[in-house]
Image (cartoon, rainbow, N blue to C red):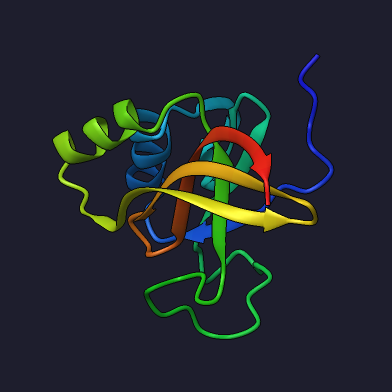
Length: 140
């Protein structure tokens, strides 16, 4: 049985097919299930989960204000992956520019630093997606 996470963001998108192609073909997510008639897809990548819902002005969706691009201002979604390089290559082949180039970063977390190789890309609607390859920990 498919296990759903306790926190799963649902992103409103302008075109489900374009968004789903980005998340599946470029980032490596799989479709856990979908309801094409509702413009909805639930995606999973090794436990990282996201829902996509196509904007439909007649569907009574939970929109608190008009949507204008880029969507998701003020949020970025961090997703752990096994390796970032193959994803960067797929994004380049699909014509997506990186928002932030790939680099190794160390963040202090109490008495250790946590390392991650990371880059940021925008999805077709402008949501910021940060892909992270874990590098381990080291003392501060």
